[in-house]
Amino acid sequence: MENYLTRITPNQNNWTKPSGPAGKCGLQKKSPYEGKTHFGWEEWLFRDLRNPSLQLNGYCYGFIQAFHGKNKDRTGLENLYLYYRECDGKNSRNILIGKISNIEIIKTASLTKDEILKIEQFIKQVKCDLNHPDFIDYMPDFLQMCGEKSLYNVRFKPEDVHLITTDLSTHEIRLPHGWYRFNLYDLNNEPKFLDQLNKKF
Image 1 (cartoon, rainbow, N blue to C red):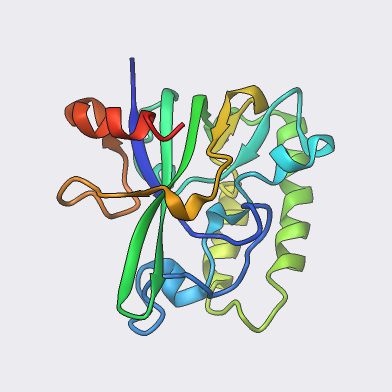
Image 2: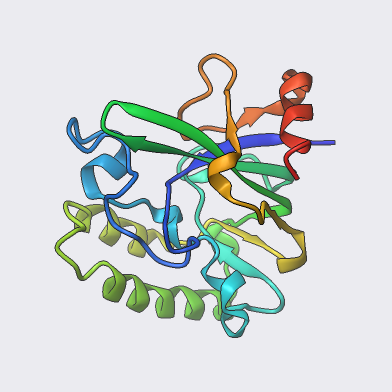
């Protein structure tokens, strides 16, 4: 069975809309992306999950950085575990959020008319949510992603989302060496670590 891990941006709104710079990493050096702009495109990941009326044909749509411009050969994953890195000055910690099963990778060339309409509606929401002085230096990327129709790059069914429901702050994890970027990491290469993650559910 496929088991992968990836990092997403921290969020204080249950990943329904951006929550500002609090908890973001790299605010002083403006790297990674969340440190430069004070948000990440994953911050709407569970917007459809929390608002069923937004779902399309039983699917939630979102964005995960690990599939933006890379891992394009993949069509989906059986299990994708999600964590975020929370920063406070020089201190940081990695927190497990949960996992999404049977996640599908969206190919822009295969978008349906309904999906294109959904993206267009979402663009309007993104403009509204980012209309705040907290969010900076994002417009070139936003315009490019609008043109590419890449603001959504994954979809999944609500029943396949398995989130940790207890206090997330108690679910800190210690990552294998080098596993700190917004990449895709194969957990089957670290079976003991995978077992530790599964014990948190």
